[in-house]
Length: 268
Image 1 (cartoon, one colour):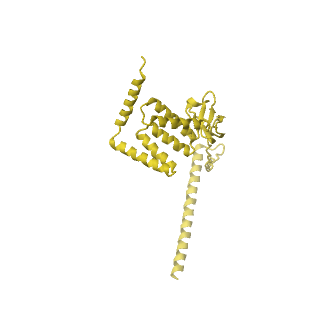
Image 2: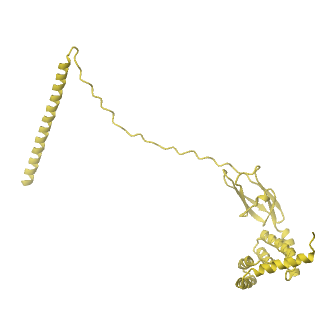
Image 3: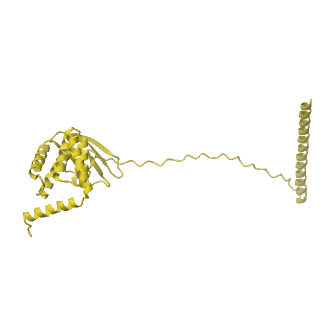
């Protein structure tokens, strides 16, 4: 079923009215103040401030006239690609809202801006590897590139345009493309696989241990009887004990002597 143009206009006006009605009275008043401050900043050649204020007003409610204001301020700041896109949106909004106030004036200025910028912006075609690497992310002039635009022209402001790319398992890639007004440049993304780091070896220092002391068993003379052998081992053990006691006595005497000498010296 075909809808009459008059009905489309009525529906569009209804949607705009419903959008305005969704805002509170305080937000509508604040939006008006933001636009007044934006106009004052523009008249004072403070274009960055004017753009910021108008963008905030557009977040409350966007209209074709606000888009026109934003596009003109973007052009003043040299953001030609952004201005070109905003002017295009302005024209689209006008087509969707034929009942816009001052529609003829707004449409004429948006159209003139859009046509004038077409010859001033450049285009960059980013060619990515095939098949597309996993988790590929490409940026053009700092903005993420929609995957739908891989291999397709992307509107950019003329000058030095940085292009970056990252992907899973690959080193990050970066290039700078110089784009002249009205020109189209291509750049091919070339990703190198990231090398896998070798595991770091752990150095272990061996702990020095004392060599075990091996005691030779006593030599038993051939032909000796078991009883004699046991008696011999017993005398050897007893002799060792006597020698140990004798050494202890001598050491004790020496210590006592040293103590006596030391005490006598102190008293003297």
